[in-house]
Length: 308
Image 1 (cartoon, helix red, strand yellow):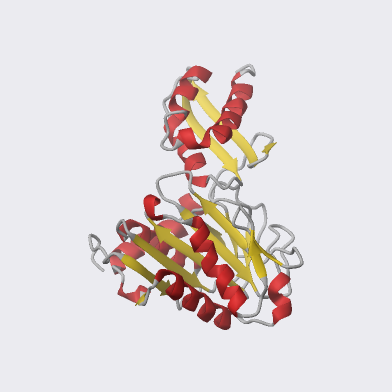
Image 2: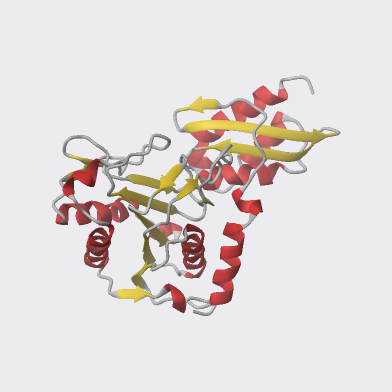
């Protein structure tokens, strides 16, 4: 596909034959950048074992696993080869979190897994156990949604990767087929895209970025974390002559797009809480995320109240 190419209006999907999470994230970003209004796309892949970090999380202290930093928020997740990862791609105006979540819940039901969705689009079995992880972020210009299903009996103590559906004896490939059929039914879609047909240069540029140290690694936090109803938060600020030179924000909050925009917006800002508020509160979609931003600004106030 040419970089400026646009698919026809409708829905389409990609089932990746590759397990490299950085590669599949590059495909995902390519699709985000080339999908027109009026589209919904679904991407499915089976990941190789790795540690998947939320967009704004600190890098883990010690690990022998490959590390992938994803674009959506949430906690650290240890992907296993027994996982299936489903992502949805659309413009902001075409994003429908509930319908997208229904693709997965209907697929599970078609395989004999009784499940329900609550108002937060979390999918549970009839016994109340969580069936999968549903991470979505509608805090920025790009609406991201990633769902992760684990068919193994092994759970994940670090990030609560559910293992409840293991009792139904599903394997990843049967699950992928069911999700494909569910998507095609709900979205009246029959167009399947081969990821190898996408623009190779652009895909390679994204892949290099997602593999880069600048994206995967970050400096360790020097400050304690604050806990809020939407997640945990830690902020480090460096200033010189009362001008902010660097801001590092760490969080497992789901509003990853908005939270990641805050540090960039404050470079060169006067080291004053009024100036910080003026920049943060005019960020795109800030008005829809004021409860989160009030907590963020409260942490900034605490930092600035300490002697320099």
